[in-house]
Length: 316
Image (cartoon, rainbow, N blue to C red; front, side):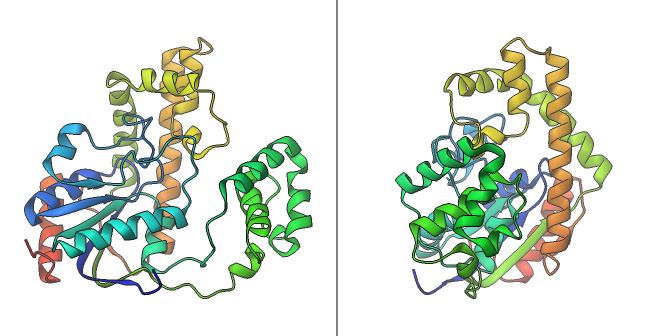
């Protein structure tokens, strides 16, 4: 689609993990007759419902949910791929006169919608897979492959960043231009119109406690069985889903390498560290977004509802 989608009104909710954004989105969807669109890079995969904190089946039954569990863990979901899927869903929601509520913790996905990305064509699967295998086989020498493929890009990418190294090489081989050249193309937003841009920014100590409590709750909800089943698939450890928070410690526990208390402690530490990185992104990259620090769910929902009502987005 060359032209951006002009919405009559959409709600965008970003926030760190465990900040309550999914519950807020569901409450708003029920009050506004809205439909929820996932903007979390892990929740697009179907294999880990519990460990990626995807909405439960009961929650999904309370309002329409889109782009949750739609891809296999063997696939790569880039911001470009997600934005193409999201735009198709948003066009359908808009055509039915419903309010889209886009919610998640992946800042780059929101940037793709509201600011746009470089217009890089999709890379054929065979090229992508061949490059990923070559980079994995090269080990510490993978950066040299990028130097040969795109010297300008290699200057700004760390030798340890295998994912971005592979991306640079696959774009060089799969398109007519280098990634460093594509990055110079001015991006254009994919979604325009009346947008309620919301970032949840709760107190850090409160968020840390929430992260720890939620990971413990996941254990009782079947996270270990999920991790064991995913580990048994033998997927490439470089795949995005294999980097899910707490996955590796739980696989180690399921394999008998560590005890459960160690696995939980490591999973909690990973979650807290990721939430901190998200907070930094939202604070520095979403400066113009409306920030809310309320932690009580009912009060927060009331505040946000008043905010979107003032923007004229309550079109139920």
